[in-house]
Structure formats: C-alpha cells, structure tokens
Amino acid sequence: MRQKLTVLAPALLLFLLATAAWAAWLGWDQHRDQQPDGSTTGPYETWQVLGLALTVGAAVCWAAYRRHAHAAVFATTAGTTAAAFYDWSDDASGLFVIGVAMVAVGTLLATAALAALTPRKPPSP
Image (cartoon, rainbow, N blue to C red; front, side, top):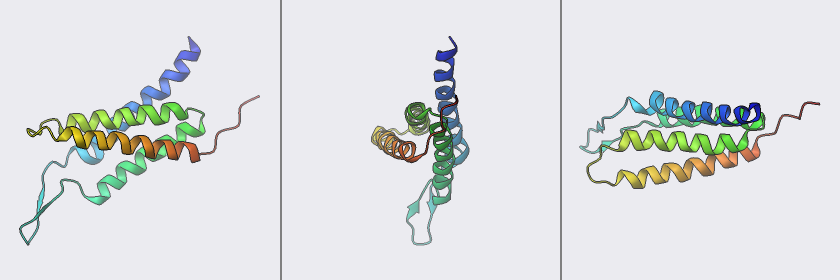
C-alpha cells in the first residue's frame, strides 16, 4: 500500500499543480487585444506563457530530482492538456482540438527533456 501511495501521490500532486498553474497564468485572460493597426493579438501575453512554463518546469525538476521522473512527465502533460481542453472547449469551430494536441505534444517533449536533464537524488542507504 505504501509503495502505491509513493507512486500515486506525486503524480496526483503534479496533475493538480499543472491544472492550477494553467488557471493561474492563462485561465483568467480570455480576450484578444485590439492593436492600433486594427489587428488582434492574444489572448495570452508572452509573460503569461513563460510564467506557466517556469512554474511547471520547476515542479518537473523537483519531481525528477526526487526520482519521480515518469510521474513528472506524464502527470504534468495530462494536467496541462486537460486544462487546455477545458479552457478552449467552448470554441464552436472545433479547431481547439488541434491546439490541445499541440499543447499535449509540446508539454510531453519539454517535460521529458527537462526530466532527463535533471540530476537524480542519490538513493538513501
């Protein structure tokens, strides 16, 4: 039982942290910005996406260092993808699925690379 808990707890924590980070950094900004030339940008600013990436990246590094690299990669990817799906699912065109797929692939690749580059904590004797 204890071994299952030591595997599931980090995964659940990382899933919840990824979804909460999405909500904190990107979830509140839903409007496009009108530029003086008539074009629109957004809804997210660069600093918001960087904040999300740094928050999630720090959590992945922490988990990978604590020898939970698989949970870091898969739970973070699942949490970010679920948050993107929920946030964008009101798009009537249905094209949001392509964006969600891009978030899933990008998050999976980035977290896998980050977890692979993070040194591991030495096993306790």
